[in-house]
Amino acid sequence: MQSSDKKSYIKRNFRFLAVGWTVLLVVAFSITVYLVYLNSIEHARIHAFGAFEKDVLFRRWNALHGGVYVPITEYTQPNKYLKLKDRDVTTTNGKKLTLINPAYMTRQMYELARQEGGLLGNITFLNPIRPENKADQWETFAFEEFEKGKQEVASVEEIGGQKHLRLMRPLYVEAVCLNCHQEQNNQIGEIRGGISVAVPLDRHQKQIVLHVSGFFGIYGIVWILGLVTLKKVKTDFIQNEQLKNKAELELEELNRKLEEKVEDRTAELKKTQKELANKEKFSMIGKLAATIRHDLRNPLAVINNSNYYLRMKIGDSDETLKRHFNMIDQQIGYADRIIGDLLDFSKTTSPKMQAASVNQLLEEIINSFQAKKGLTINLEPMADLPLVSLDEGLIRRAIENILTNAEQSMPTGGEIRVSSRIEQDQLCISISDTGEGIPKENLERIFEPLFTTKKNGIGLGLMIVKEILAKHKGVVLVESEVKKGSTFIMKLPLSVH
Ligand code: HEC
View (tube, rainbow, N blue to C red):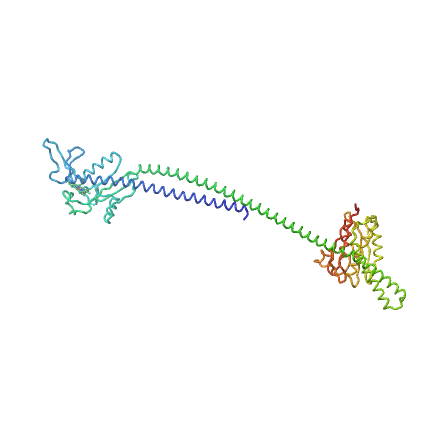
């Protein structure tokens, strides 16, 4: 993966993480808010339940006494629904008292509470003695629930435009109740009305707002801290990634350089090895040449002389003999050239440079070259060629060697074209033939010592050409195409210093 791709991939992932983190906190915060709400409702419920319990206690206390006598005032008038003989009494001092039953007491208590703007309460029944005590809609529903076995009904309801937690629990008939409640054949343990309490939620709502804003602050801080950490981790990560990439690139570069070096060194080593091998061949040929040149020159000279003498003696009359004499001559020439090559090779002297007309030299060489039948040699000299300083003897030998090779590559005859020209401050002599050509795999090796593909050759000719050119600070190149022919180009610097 590209490093920029990687970067955007990481960025995308981190964006995903940031969104995930935000969603997580929003969900957590929502749950917290909901829990805060439930908690405050529960508080209100406990509050209401406490009130209920106390009411029941007061009422029981009252009921235990079969009602309580209090002075009759404008506010506390005798209860018209209480039909007991001793409802109203007068003390020995003439003070008028009336009996307060639990329901009446509860009612008055709730009236007081209402005036103080707190808790609301009601004593109620579906079928009350006092019509005002009749259950309202919500209370009726609660009674239905009690019938099903529920002990308590509580919910948030609106009363007078304000939210309240309403709670209602049933009242059961006890023995003490029966003093006054025999009206409906009440049985002990059965439901005889209920007390419904309503706690205003405004105080709790304020509490909710307070808690929620507190949590909002905490969650906000945690959220921001999380995002900051995430961002830090992201930049660190990207930086790390970049460092890693850089290190990788550097490593790659080092590797590449190392490989290059190894390749270079290997190539150098191969070259030196080859040079060494060639040098070995050179020294071997040198030694060989030194011994051969004396030992063969003389016998060859003797054969040549004898051949000449025989020819003189016998004459040219017999055609067969003539042919054989010619063959002897030819083979002597061939052997002589090999010896010449060996001689040239073993010579270590530096070339004797002289200003020479190359075109003239070429003409002389071609004229004296005894081309066999069917072979034509054409010279294409460049006009106005300046004199070039060279060792005539050596260059002649080089050109002759190439011509001999060309001739041998065309056993059935053909054409050799020799031309001279100047190219980039260099004298170029090119010799093209229309012979067999040299296969690609041999092209590089033909200048090596002792490399030959001929039946009767020892592989020195072209190597000597190369050596001669090197002595002139020149080169020899070859282009060849199998079955079409080869071109040898000798390049010599125009001015040899
Ligand atoms: C001293 C007599 C007396 C005793 C004891 C008494 N009550 Fe009542 N109760 C009354 C009277 C009278 C009313 C009629 C309405 C009022 O006074 O508000 C009443 C009303 C009620 C109501 C309101 C519904 C209605 O019918 O108007 C309930 C509920 C109730 N009583 C339950 C009880 C229970 C439960 C007990 C036993 C723990 C009990 N009372 C004991 C006299 C009594």
